[in-house]
Image (cartoon, rainbow, N blue to C red; front, top):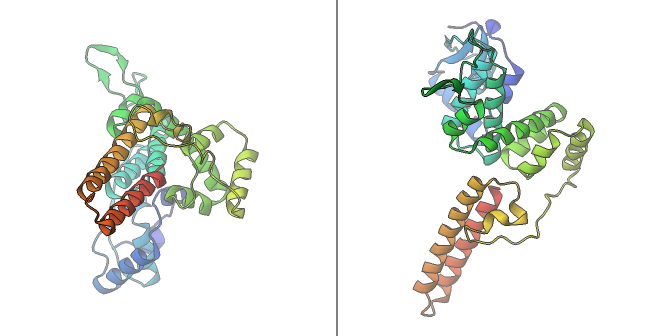
Length: 286
């Protein structure tokens, strides 16, 4: 069993673990009190890297727990391990996933190069050993997005972290989707001044910030959805995925429209409400 006094808490590592909602936290607390802490907390050089909620609850209720020590070559490697865990474990918002991809890119770029001068995460092209894959390209294959998306995500992550330095609560709200701000805006702020970021944070805190470009219409055709002014923060790959989702929802509604065209108004209204709800869900994902 691990002595609580020997556990080192790390602000950066903890910030990468999304807070549990009150109900989920309560259920975890009740489970730990009744059954004890059955899963070991993970530490690196005495620093807690996984299990912050369990650590807090165990400490408050004097519940014993075990730890498992993991070995990493650097702090950046720990960050990448945490990111990989979060992406694999959780149902993330699009903004959280974007943030994690940006953090992953940034961590790998900071890793010290090996003796040959190549980032240790680069994969050498077998046909030409002098041309290793770039970090952005390797991560684009890992996350199944374009290299440009990975590079843009790094800028978004920089801005979100800057916001977190000013207001951790606003950072949490942006990541959770409670506050809507598009990725293109965050990307642009990465090269702006701290005063600009502080102004956005102040607007959000005051409740006066409104997401821009609400008025432009969105077409449900795959060829035009990426051209909408409302979706200018999407790269072509993201626009294609969104177009497919919108088309699937629309085609489902048209099927029901044909099915209930015999005058069953109640069922037709139900189908229409479902269609509207589905479109609103897609809108919130932007």
